[in-house]
Image (cartoon, rainbow, N blue to C red; front, side, top):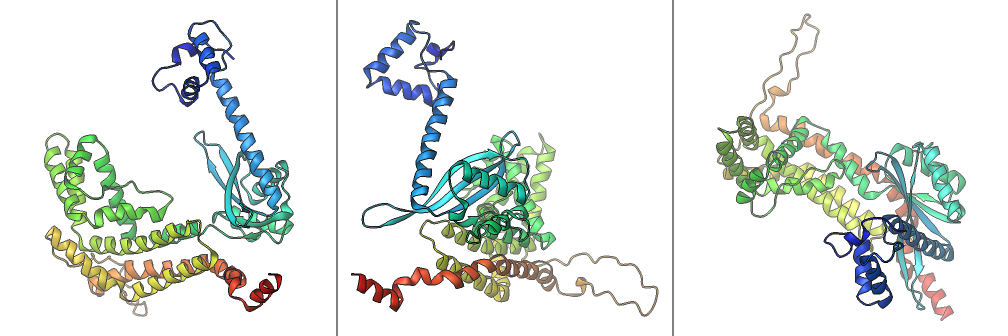
Length: 445
């Protein structure tokens, strides 16, 4: 299919991968070289180099790849479903379908766990009933039978994991063997989301980190000032969804608090005459960094995020199995319990080192007492105000204890189903150690 301007785009810089591949083929293929020569001399108006042909070739290749994947899955028979919904750039909701299966890769019966993306499809009904219908339609379209499905993996959305009307429930009603397991990394992410909502100080911490990044990333000159002071870790944009990834943002401030403080002072002095708003923001953030409760919050959140992020990365490895995941979750719960008992003292000690770097007094400041309505009758209860407690105890009650309590509760509730599956199926991962397995294997050999 010809279109005007193709001859002008060949052998030009940044003309796209499609034309670039054609140019590469022409170097070693005389037929392609002769074809391109005719195009450049305007001797041929049918050259198959248009964007329409490029898109058609992509569709043909995609269909061939998907057909090959479907043939493999039909051969191995059993598979699991991994599905998720997300809007594209045009704000149209799409469902992505990925299939997970075990494939025999050689004659020695060595197996490989494979995950293969199948396709995107536009959805109009995001309820459990609507999504389950779309998934079953996709399986039927690709000649895959739902009765051969042995697992489901979705996020923790109510429309996906709902016990009564979620996608997993609708599919379980049709195939009770399609066991459902919510995404472990997403569960860890929601654990941190729950913990971050427990206190104003947590919200304030991440608000300050977001303001720091926005301030320096607002212009090239301001970013250069930051890079001049910071040598190891740069500030990172806070992720709206992946909470465990916020460890990079916290880490940059946790271990470079002095350098970032100096960068703010330099920025405030430079912008004092030209841009007072920026200078005021820099000085305001400087004051926030110097508060001891902020420093302790920073240390506490880094310790928790580092632990969660480490587990999240390990859980994503291909060699991870059910027993190892359960062990990781138990270790994380033990860490949170121990940190709940002894972590605050360690955090305060580390925060004092940061305060020494900033040359500020490592001391909690008492919050202003809230003015309550005067009691009208003697039988009305006395104010049990937190202001009567020491500032350190008040910080522990308002920030530290709720944070760890919610995290411990969430890790227990969100991974309860995982523990149940481990109790049922963990023997399979140690099957070679079972006596009867050894006897059967010895008899067969």
